[in-house]
Image 1 (cartoon, rainbow, N blue to C red):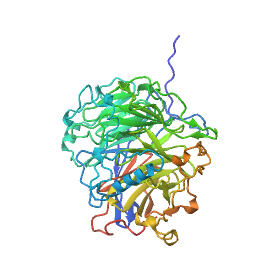
Image 2 (cartoon, helix red, strand yellow; image 1 turned 90 degrees about the vertical axis):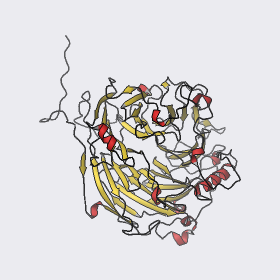
Image 3 (tube, one colour; image 1 turned 45 degrees about the vertical axis):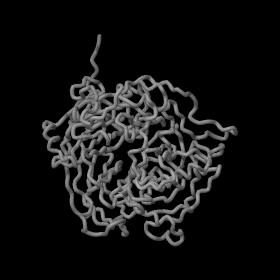
Image 4 (spheres, one colour; image 1 turned 90 degrees about the horizontal axis):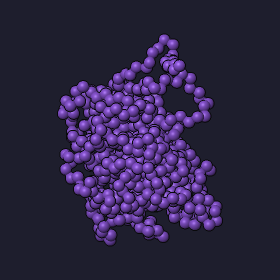
Length: 598
């Protein structure tokens, strides 16, 4: 005789958890201010996203064993994907590409010279030897453009931005077991009509929910649409900057199940890619649209793989075109040689189905990646404590930089492409120079893992840089450094605020100092071209922050700079917006020289 299972048990005196609404809070006082040299940043407001209850098929866990050894499903704190339909013009302090002899052209030349030292050139500039007075990144070749199989969509290009292709399935009326529930606001059409084209849309993940918010609205806490998934958690998402219009937004989301959703919020249409992990079954830790591409996006899976997908192609069970180990063994067999193992190239003629390209980068989890401003290089950081530089068009690993210890969590490029900033489990923020293949400075100030780093383009110019970092210590730190500081003698500059030691010439050696738990070795031939020596801490300059302050009660996980504000998010769904100082309120132009509150 069949007996129904007992209903789920809830703590005594309570019923099933109820779904709540977002809350908007406003605070005032010195505790909610950030004092920097250019003025005072003031907390505008805080949005607390409602955490969705567990799906009815998953009764709540009453007793969580902190000593349990079984792996829990991966989760991620709240992250934002921002979209402005009509982007505002940057301020004059922003780095401008049209300046003759700009830093961008300098770094291109430096990378060219660096590549000529025994390696094939990785730069594809069209007019070498000529004065480049304009740096136009729109002329950078689109990924896969040289492959005729990826040229067109069903035989013809899509040129009309108002007739862009949308997914086929309606997410509101979906009967898929993957999507649990969709809650659009009652007056969605009216709110979209009233939306300021220069206003800020935001997509935010919280647990098994993804919310679409209008941060420029007076009712910003009320989501435009909330999507709840059955069991999968959205770990990452991104908005395509080149296809967004007032009637169309392309967004992709990566999930803990390995699935990927292509979502168009205006029409509430969606498509599911890598369904049930058909191509790669591991969770998606990071996802980004390929630069200047309407269809292609790059997803980092937690098995150390980078996969390029096409939003409109059907999936097919992946069979590697080039089977083999990720690492080539050296003749002496002293250790594995790091390389980029291409299991499917973008130049493959077999492009009828996904994936478009499939790269095995590491045996460890990829935490984050970032495209260079010239759209030619990819910086990848992973749990094995490495920063890798990949030439994406040639599908080639160029450089590998190890950390002192622990994994590297976050990475970003400077607006001119000259520097890369990383944050990791060693509680440090590191500044790397790609042109010189060296570590410029270590930034000390965090008390826990650094979860996000980002440059502030509105306070960067040809010589001065401002960037920020947040960490699990719930602190926001702002940092300043300038090109002039890089060449000062260390004895004269080490005790000054925001100083950086003199350039130490990179010494290429076949023996590289690596972190103790690294699975990489540099004894193999050719390592002096890929794995770069790690400078001892005694020879590495340290950079103090210009502002450091705890801005939340929970670990922070995302940081973004906008023209009028700084935005931070935490692992529990708090979104805080900090207004920039009013013009002329205090401080001067350029990079501030005084330290902020600690």
